[in-house]
Image 1 (cartoon, rainbow, N blue to C red):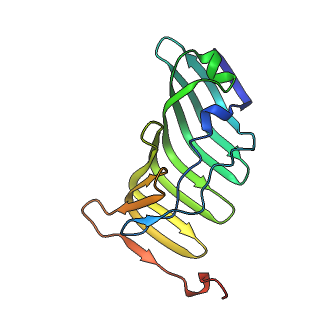
Image 2 (image 1 turned 135 degrees about the vertical axis):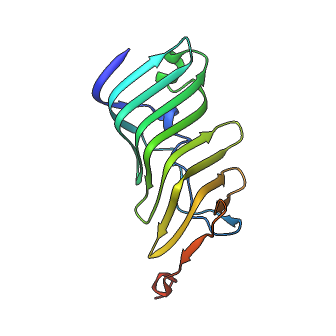
Length: 178
């Protein structure tokens, strides 16, 4: 099944995708990127393909997924699922993993995170954003590394340097009351 340039509401597909958070050189609690569970999710892509034999849904070409103030952009997004695609389309399926490829960007009204690839493992509740340079920004603060890991179950996040050094720029104007 292929659709072209179609706005596809699929709450089950992305309910767990729009999750990342600012991270620091050490573990920290996450804030910011949150699931807006009571709001619809719209996915816009050049192509949409479902392969029930391999249990894979593929969105490709300028993929944009929006839920509330959360927005995810990438060149390609694949969704691995269990059960049938009919269940996924109706919001009743079991999503196992979501992978993002090519120019991954996650945005809210106050934060953004960019990387080359990303994935969300549903059973473990781990979101990972990786790349030559993973950049997190919030209120003028900038954090740069190569791998961001967010545990959504514990609200812990870690930014790795991958053999280099994590770079942090803290803006004093970002503190509350300034």
